[in-house]
Image (cartoon, rainbow, N blue to C red; front, side):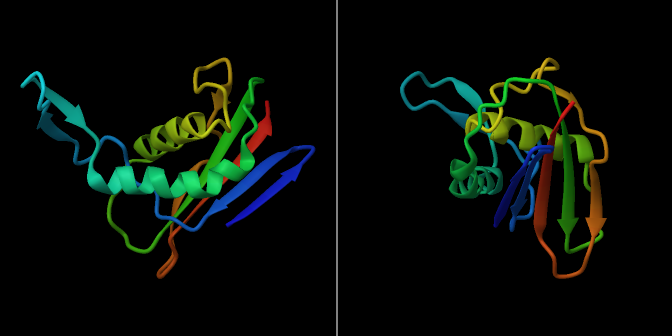
Length: 131
């Protein structure tokens, strides 16, 4: 994993295959109240935790307008939803305090984000630049 910080922005390379937050959600039962609730999939929870290992090193709490560009390298041609992957990254960047929030005042655009098929490559490249 590499973090490259320049005047123009931050580039974060995560050696991880991005997981969607919305796919494979589970309905679980709260053991105390007996009420059902929606939980993220095990794969997403592991991905979020693994990202934390890398992102703890780049706490910035960015609060100014930025463009976030994500390049998702995937090892197969399975269909994926780009906006679901972007949402997962936005929530993770907020959780690990790279961004203060993921609202429109901070993330103003996702210009240039894309999914690229490359056999045997699982990587997520995040570029954050001032808008």
